[in-house]
Image (cartoon, rainbow, N blue to C red; front, side):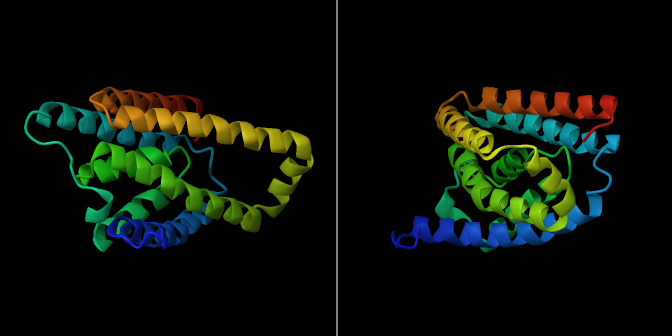
Length: 207
């Protein structure tokens, strides 16, 4: 991003730095606040709300397609947009909230086109996941140590490689769908999954 020296590269770098910093501060605070209450059934509610937002997104895009689609690109993001997306991503620290779901929804509502919304969400995942891992190590030492001690290094390595490969395939497929006219179907499906997950959380009592 630094080497490219163009507007897209600079915008992307600023987005990742600002969004990640805000996500880190807000996410760490939320983690400390709710780490002892992750089994509260109320945590299913955010996913139901998220699902409703995604369904609304799909409806807006579907009925506005003939007139106007979200068309803002990465280079059109402002500092205010970066801050807002960082805040929304930080809220995903609440148990039961989909990080990709809330960030994609926020960007679509900000008028970012679907393909760039998914692309930015996936890119933002990299520093966010590293930060989440560090927070877990720092504040869940004993619990994390007991889990790690039961998993061998080869098993962990295979799991990491498998997860990375599957993620790359799925990300490529999702970006392909986001760039096509089938984006409303994808958003609709994500909304229904989110609502199902939230209802399941409320019924079972697990976030």
